Image 1: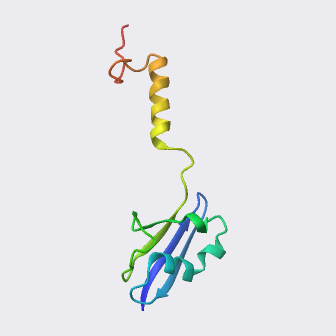
Image 2: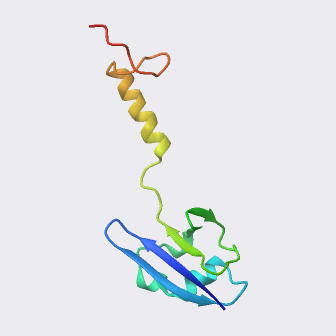
Image 3: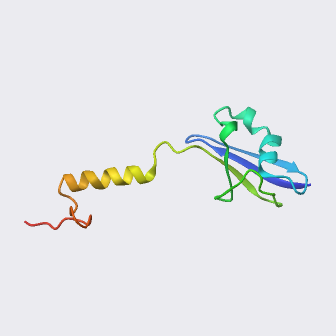
Length: 108
């Protein structure tokens, strides 16, 4: 048996459970065995996105002693879209160069 942590965090709280799983167990098996899906109803069990120590992994990833399985929440907004909109707004307001996208030169 090996010992692993299963973690799920919300903006205000975090749930961290230690679970013993057999050697060769997968990340998905550890999440199910931990009972975190029942304890945290916010988790969508049908579309789990997992990571081990801040690196995304597949549900079939074979665990090692001491692994920390993190359950990721879906993104609210696509970071690329947000940055693109912010850059377009800066160009419209004259805070960015319309050709290069860099900072506009102050002509005062």
